[in-house]
Structures are given as C-alpha cells and as structure tokens.
Image (cartoon, rainbow, N blue to C red; front, top):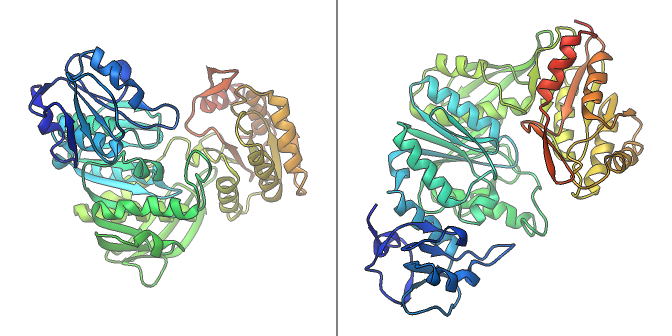
Length: 491
C-alpha cells in the first residue's frame, strides 16, 4: 500500500534510536511469526512472552523497523523506534496503517460489568432499523455487514479493531457499537482514536485477580479511562461507583436511571408473563418521553434498554422504531427464552459465576414461578471457590438445583459436581446431580411443572464443551430441540 515508517508513527511520541524513519514499509505486525521483508514489528511485553526477545529475529527476516519500549541489540540495518508504551504505539500505528477508519464511522463504546453485550445488540438493532448500517464488536462476535466472526476476547487487539473498522467502512457501515472491557482499556486496545459516545452501564467487583486487575480501585480506574477518550459520555446515574468512574472525565455528560437527577428517567415498571415468555414494561421521561416494552425479563432489562435508548436518541431515531426494534430483540445466551411450552418458561443464560447467577435468580423470583429450577455446572481448571459459591447461591434462591457439567477441561466431571454439591448443602434447596449435561436438560424439561421457570445457566452463547483439551460441539438449543421432538413434557 506504499507507506513510510514516519507516516505510520506520526501520532506516537518516540525516539529514533537507530536508522531512519524515511523508509518504505510493507506490513505492521506484533506476532513474530508474521514478520516478512519490510515489516514493522511491534515488541509487546505480554504476560506470557516478551516480544523484545524476537527483535534480532526481525532483522534476520528483513524487517524494516522494530518499535520497542526496552533496549534491544540489533543489526544496524534495522530502524529502532523507542517509545514509553508499545501497546499504545501499536494502537496508534494500526489506526494510521488502516487509514484512520474511525474518522469515517460514528463510534460507540460501552463499558461496565454487566449489560454490555445486550446493550450493544439493542443499539445495533435500533440503528439498523433506522437506516444506519452498524458494525458490532463484542463478547460473542464481530459483525461486519453480513459477516459474523466469532470472538476470542471481549475487546480484540488494537490492530484487529482498526482492521475491523476499515472493513466496516468498506462494507458501507456508518456506525460501530462495541463492548469495551476494562482489560481492553488497560492494554490500550482501543487506543489511537476518540469514541463519539462512551457509555457506562454499571460496576460490580469482577475480573480482580493475578492476571487481571490488582484490586477494585484499578478496575474502576481502567473503566474510567473511556471517559477521557470520548466526546459524549452517557452514564448510569444509579450506580454507586458513578463519581469514581467520572473522575477526570473530559466528555459531555448525560445520565439515565431511576434517579430523579437522571436526564432520562424510568418509572412505573411492571413485569409480565405471557405464557412461557417473560418481559418488562416501563415509562421513560425526561429528555425523551415514551412507554417501553421488552420481551426480556427483569429490572436489568430496563437498564439495558435505557442504555440503548440514551445512545440512539442522539441519532434522532423515531420512537416507533425504538419500540419495534426492542420488542424483537433476542441476544444469544443472555436470558434467551426458548419457546418450548406455554405452561412453563425455559431459558439459556451465560451466568457463570455466583454474582451473575444470584442476580439472574433474584430477578426471576420476582415473577413468582411455581418452582424456580436452576441447572448449571462449573468449568474445570478454574478457581474451586466458584463451585462452592455458585452451589450455595443456587440452593438458596432456586427450588430445585440440577448439578451437571459445564467445560470439565482436564478435570474429572464427577469431582467438579461433588464440589458444587458441597456448596449446595450450605443452604437448604433441593438438588439432583446428573453429570451428562444433555441428560440433565432432558430431565429438567420432562419433569417441568406448570408455572415453572427453568434456567440453563453457564454456557450461554457457547456451542461447545471442552473435555481433556478438546472442544466438542454441544449447543443447548439443539439438546432442547431433541427433547421437544420426543414430546414427553407438558405443553
């Protein structure tokens, strides 16, 4: 594409330690295996390996330059660009490499502990129905035009984001809505451009541990960075951490929530059950006045839809379009109700830790089911504490807990199930253990009673099961369809 090194790094603070920047480059890479003649190789100090150890190899492969944050010894043929943070440099160089595609898109970034995924799909649905072609980057997938690419991380590497933006522009997209994780902000994956809209949904302690955030303060700080990198900030007015999230913000501020102070306010919430399908309705007032109804259960659906409406209001979309878009929204694996029977409700949800399971079961309790049935397992080679806490939460809030397998990975499924049962016994709920997940799902449906709400928790959008390092196809929707075909349950 004919680009000079100087053009690639013109937005970066750097020192040219050796060589010159007036040289033609071919590709921009951060994976040493992809280095070719004329490449610029960005040395990233990762948690697993350090890219700086491949600097000499880059010279041998004929690279034009390396971008480093540490001293390296390399042949004089190689230009060495030194900067304070190579992750930020990668983001800035990626934006330049793909011709600054964010300038041609209206960019929307959503951060928060919960609700990011559902809110992004709601925004995309409303904007698409309003005639704005909209790309999406999130936990489940990246959507570019008609193409859907399964996701690896919630927020991809900066190079991949800029490449996706460029492909979105080329596909005729006018907007992009994306989930922005605290990790993504911390590692500068969304560096190199300014968001038009930055949204904060909520914050609860999560992702705190040796490989993620050192403590809650760090987690909050990383999320707050989005609001120093966007033009218009939209915030959940009801969140207890709001002040810390807004600390140092440089954006315009707008709020939504139940609070009297919010710019967009929700009131008159009512839950409804339409025979196997659960939903919520409410009134919105303030900067927009309308009634809202959604076929997704619970108060968090009020927040998710308010998030989406707060954003889309800025695009001048019609109230009718908002209503019709929200009434049809279904997000794979997020309180996804499967239409099995009008006598009971069956849903799939991604809840895979105690916090999300507690939130989900508490929400469903408000619909006064005859029985609340919770089916879940826990992943192998992950913290054992999660098994005890999820078992206890389910036993406390559900009438029946069906303990089964999730992704056993390299552990014995029976051992994981035993751990969960240890947690279940800390409360007084009834339980049954069925290790085979397909059999457990069959049991749940065939023993359903009129008025039940049954939750298949933990897998969500995943369509595989990981056993002994190998992924096997397993989609809960297909397992349910098999049971429905046999027909041994109340209609």
